[in-house]
Image 1 (tube, rainbow, N blue to C red):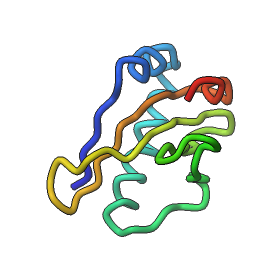
Image 2 (cartoon, rainbow, N blue to C red; image 1 turned 135 degrees about the vertical axis):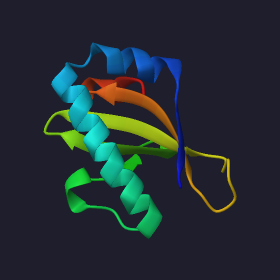
Image 3 (cartoon, helix red, strand yellow; image 1 turned 180 degrees about the vertical axis):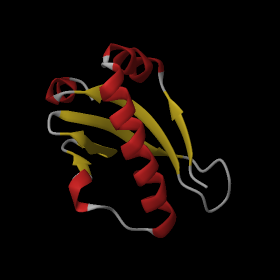
Length: 96
């Protein structure tokens, strides 16, 4: 099972989302976890690297909703560890 952590900045960003946005992000995260288990990614999530930031990726959770994460050191052997860095609109790319 993949492990996750949210840094303080992500948590502040998350709290600024509406309850509906928070719920949608959490729904997409569950799909993301399922995809990590199978080694596939849904095209609708538009998972890709963030330009100029190696090991940092974005995932789409809404038409203007993005979350930025990085792969961290595994907490359990063989299970990916994701560190959520930012969440919000395209504005988060100014400082991922």
